Length: 252
Image (cartoon, rainbow, N blue to C red):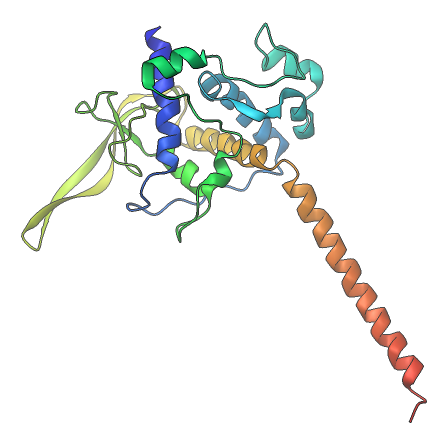
C-alpha cells in the first residue's frame, strides 16, 4: 500500500510539473526518436512499468503498439496485465475512487501530455519532459524526500530513482543587491542507480519519445504525406507554367 501511495504521488506530481512556472533553467533538447522503433518500444515498456500504475492513457489502445513494430503476441507477453486484452485502452492500475478519497482528485490522463506543455520560448513539450525527468534530486526537507530543479517544490517523488540512483543538487549562495540567492552548480551522486548516467538519459529519451508518439501516432505519416504532396504540387506547378508559356508563345 505504501508503494502504491508513493507511486500515486509521483503520478500527480508528474502532471503538476508539466504545468509549472517556466522560470528556472533552460530546457535541454529532447532527442528526436519518434521514428526509432527500438526507442519507442523501450519507451512503451518504461511507460507501462513506471507510469501506468497511476495514470491512464484512455485514448490509446494496446494493439496500436503494433504501429511501432510490436507483434500482438509481444504486447500480450510483455505489456499486458493478466486481466487485460490487447484491444483494451491503457487503464491505470489504481482504483479511481480510492485515488479521489486519498488525494481529492484522480491522476490525469497522459495520452497527450507531450502536447499539453506550451513551449513559451524554451522548447517543446518533449524538451520540458526530458529535462524535468532528469532534474530530480534528494531533499529531506520535502515530504516525499525529493525536489526538482525545473519545478522547485514539486509534490512528486522521483519515480525513476532506482534507475538513476540518489543524488543531491549542489547550490552556491550568491549575494546580489543585498539579497542571498542559491545558484545551481551541479550534481553530487549519493548512491548509484541500476543505469549509468548516459544510460539513464537514453532511457528518459526513449520514454519521452514514446509519450510524444502516443500524443499523435499519425504525426510522422502526416509529415511524410505532406512532404510528398508539396513535391507533387511543385512539380505540377512547373508543368502548368511551361504549358502556359507554350500555349501563349505565338499570341501577340
